[in-house]
Image 1 (cartoon, one colour):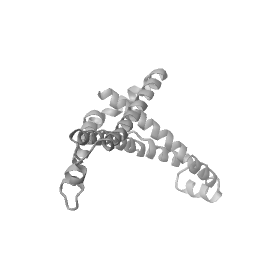
Image 2: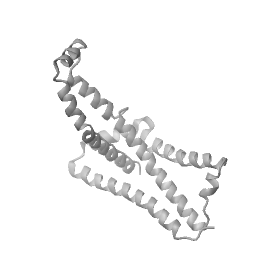
Image 3: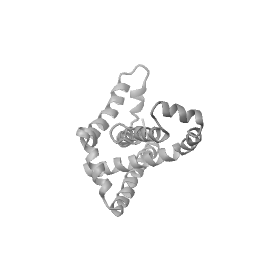
Image 4: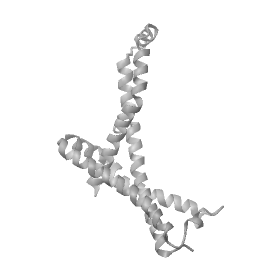
Length: 184
């Protein structure tokens, strides 16, 4: 299970890297033009900097596997996938007992809403801490996955995509189930 969850994390991270390249491409083009302005060139030289150094620093801020923006976003998405599973299971439980419980949690002034929210957040934290983040376990897996043949990475990219789509589908279908069951 740990290996599979790390594959999913790896490919979500790879997706984030590629998405940020696409999103930042127009900005890069604009700054490439700005860096050709003589005043900017002189200011950068005085500061012992260059457009290349700025680009490397920007790339590091986005894609560093320890603290970059894309690893943080992919970690959040891993937690979100677990929350979707939990909420889907909650919906199925409501359908099984034939009673809508969500109103109990969201009544004005109800302390249950905080228990519900904390309950939803604790499980993803525990699972992801154990499978991904404790002692930066994911970094070892990422290094291993980087070295795998392209054919194996391609296969696991599709499996990871299927897992993500499966979780999203399960979540959506849990609402379909709830709407088709008589609730008290």
